[in-house]
Length: 90
Image 1 (cartoon, rainbow, N blue to C red):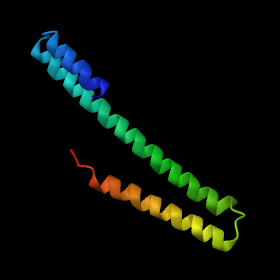
Image 2 (image 1 turned 180 degrees about the vertical axis):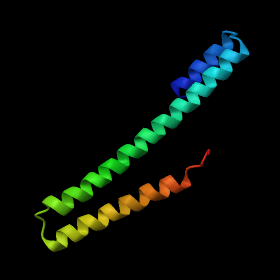
Image 3 (image 1 turned 120 degrees about the vertical axis):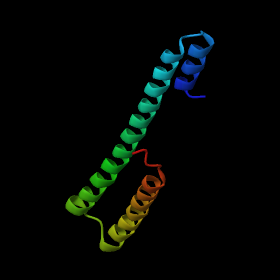
């Protein structure tokens, strides 16, 4: 059980007012969203950095570079697929 859910359950058991629980739930959901956004941005930044490094600094032979780029392409497709699967709350 995530810590935020444990905290919400504890707050409920402590018989806090409903408006406090509602606000706590809203904050916990927003924090979860922000963490997911941070993780996604981090993945995207990593992929961008890898592409730039391959373009500007690679000393790999053509065949090895092609293999590396193919692996990177698969990782990018996975990131995009994960992003496309996320529900849009807007």
